[in-house]
Each structure stands twice: as C-alpha cells, then as structure tokens.
Image (cartoon, rainbow, N blue to C red; front, side, top):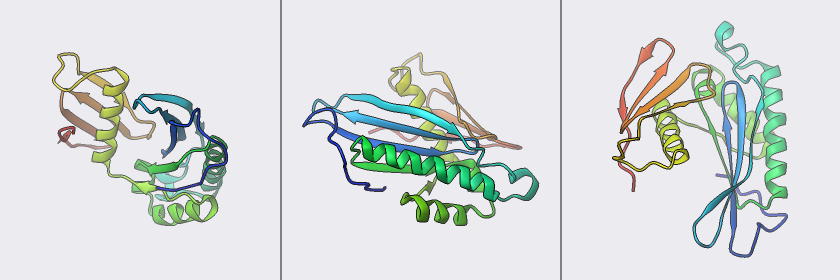
Length: 185
C-alpha cells in the first residue's frame, strides 16, 4: 500500500477516503471510496482507462515499451487525482498480464519508480476471490443465500471468473482450475 498524503480533506471530519488501482491487461481501473463514521461506503471516483498493457504479450511474452508508457501515464494521473481527493492510502494490484509477462517485475519496478505506487501482482486465485466478493457485494448478497449464483468478468484478456455459490472456477486460457472461496470474516 502507498501513502500519498492528503492535499484536501475528505467529505467530512469523520470520513476517510481510500483509492484502488487495478492494473489489468487491457485497462487500468481506478476507484476512490469514502467511508463515513458509520462504516458506510460511497464511491467518489469509479473509472477506467484503456492502456492495452498486454500489447505484445502474445507475440513476445513481454509488455512492450509503448504499453508501459501508456500505463505509467494513466497511473500517474490517477495518483494525482487521488491526492486531490485527499485519500489516506492507495492500494494497487496487477492481474493476469503482469503475472504472465516475462518482464513483469521490471514493469512493476518502472511503474513504482515513476509514479510512487507499488503494484502488487496477485495470483489468479486471489483475483478470482476478489472478483467473486465484488460481484457478491454489488448484488447485495450474503453467503448461503439461494441467489448467490453470479458471474463476474475480469478485464483481463484471458481471465473470466464464474462464481457459483462458494466455488470459483477461474478460466485462464487453456486450463481450468477450481478453488473454494475462503470463509468470510
């Protein structure tokens, strides 16, 4: 997690803002959420920029310089916007494109050097778990509800996650893997 400092206060004295950056294979998603004193969340910013970070992965297995530059520019703008909104912390994750790129660690280092944001590359299982929780939360469902069947699609080019009850079935290109979503606390 990164701590950009605050340049302006959140909505009120009891509210706290946090930002999340999701560096996907095709787009960079950006969300700022504000939590009030009662624990309720509201979206302040929710958008995405198409950067095509995964450009070149199929041909060479590496993220190309042009895609890296587009991604760095997008993330730098998001960091500036987060500071303008007075966020307490920025959390950044990277998904399939960064996991499979032969130069993924170099790309993460370049992003951190130029933006101050450390991107944590998460596993496919964690990506699936988070997609499931996001879909469940967005639908207002609780564990064990008969309506917990849902589908969530990641922006990653090869990653689709289908959440059915408590099971996750990540599809990553040519193989299937099953994982059970851990119990929620």
